[in-house]
Length: 97
Image 1 (tube, rainbow, N blue to C red):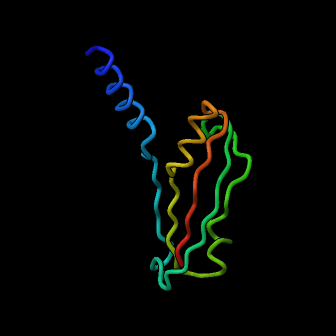
Image 2: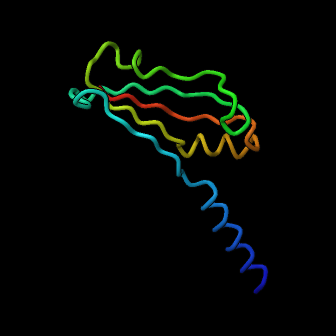
């Protein structure tokens, strides 16, 4: 009985800790007009303190004046963060024109 309880407790804590909670979204100009989407990864070390490579939303918009930017930790990003114990912390940037 105790073993089953601890198994469910561990599974619940694992699901909560791997959920995606970080999202940052903003619009430039009037926001997305055509629906074309470009996605790039951002690479950080030590829980995001040291950037290795970050995307540039303005260049990802390919000269468009109106676009939306959505930066988030996806499930895969969180999984990589968890596997490397926070040494490598990626995020995903999605620009919709």
